[in-house]
Image (tube, rainbow, N blue to C red):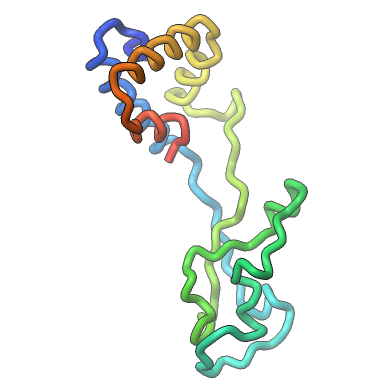
Length: 154
């Protein structure tokens, strides 16, 4: 992590790529749930093929969406990643990601994450890093996807 504040801009760029990759690898995995459609809708569904918008697939459209107001509501909200589910017919079991992840605490984080955590909690290091980021940004005005992924973790 010391290379993030090195004088050589090429080393800083390579280190950003490495840390971005490390953050992506160390990110806790998503937690998935599997439910039948009856468990989600709390009623029986006709399993025949009927294309189009129907009462049983309105809950996946944006028109019926009401954003959650609390953390508990957010974690209970079901988002499907496959927009075609329910348009013709429903699968027997729906697998969807839960809106919560395991969160690292200082006690349960891996050693590699702890090193990054300690460095980014150091105010002097962060101040230097921000100064170099500003300098790098002045020389290159394009969007830096690597730096974005380093902070986003995706």
